[in-house]
Image (tube, rainbow, N blue to C red):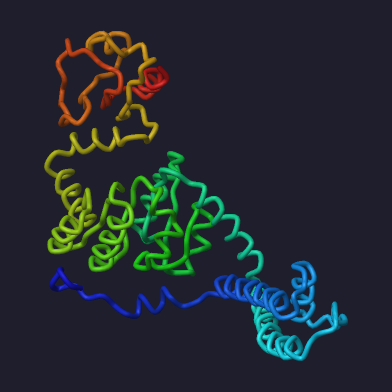
Length: 347
C-alpha cells in the first residue's frame, strides 16, 4: 500500500467484500422494478398525454402482466413503447420474484427482515462504538462493552460468525471494514470511537486511514501484532495502539516479579463489580462534590481515594493535593469499595 512500505493489500479481501448477497440483490431488484415503473408512467404521460394516475396504473399492469385491458386506446408509438416496457419491465419483475424465492428457499427471508430491523436501529445510533473484527481480541472487547451497556456496532467479514453475534446480542454488519460502504452502514459518521481489531496489521492500517478520513473527530483504538504495525498505525492516525501479545507477556512476567501488585490490579479491574473497584466520575454542576476539596470528599465517603484528576485540556494530575478544590466538569479517577464508588457516582 502506498506510503506504508512492507504492507500489501490482498485483493481477495476486496472481492469477498464486494460479493453481492441475496439481501443486496433483493434491494437492487426492488429498486430496478421501481425505476422501471416510474419510467413506464413517464413514457405514457409524454407519448399519450395521460394523467398521472392512468399512466402509473398502465405501467403497473403492463410490468406485472396481470392481463387487464388497456386503460385507453394506444397510439402506434404507445404500443411500441408498451412492447419495450414489457420486455424490460417484466424481466425486472421476474428477477425480483426469483430473488424472493431464493430468500425463501434458503431460509433467509426472516434473516433479511431481521437485518432490516437491525439496520434501522444502527441508523438511529449516535455516539456509539464500532468494533471491526469479532475474533478473540474483538470478542473480548464486545463482551466488556456489552456488560457495561455501551451502544456499539460490530463489523465482521465472516458470515459464519453471525450466529455468535446474535447470541452476544450485538448489532452487527456483515462485510469487510476495508469497504467504505460497510463503514458507512455501521454509522461511522456518528460514532464516537472505533476499535480496529482484525488479525492483519495491513488491514488495520487501511481501516484506520479510512475511519479518520470519514470522521476526523473519531477516537481510534487499533490492534497491532508487530513493532512495524504499531508504528504505522500511529502514523495512520490511531489515537491508541495495543499490542495484545506484548501486554499479555508483560502481565505474566510481572506476576512472577511482583505477584502482590498484579493481584491488586486484578482485584481493581475497572467496572468488574468486585470488592475493590476503579472508576472515573465526571462531576456535574449539580453535584454536592463541586466546590469541595479532595479531602472533604474523601472524608464524606469512607474507604475511597481520589488517585487522579483531569481538568479541561490539562494533563491528568496524579495524586492531587488534599486541599485541591473540585470544580464542575472535573474528571476524577477514584479507587475504593464498590459501594462507596456507587454513592459518589450517584451524586
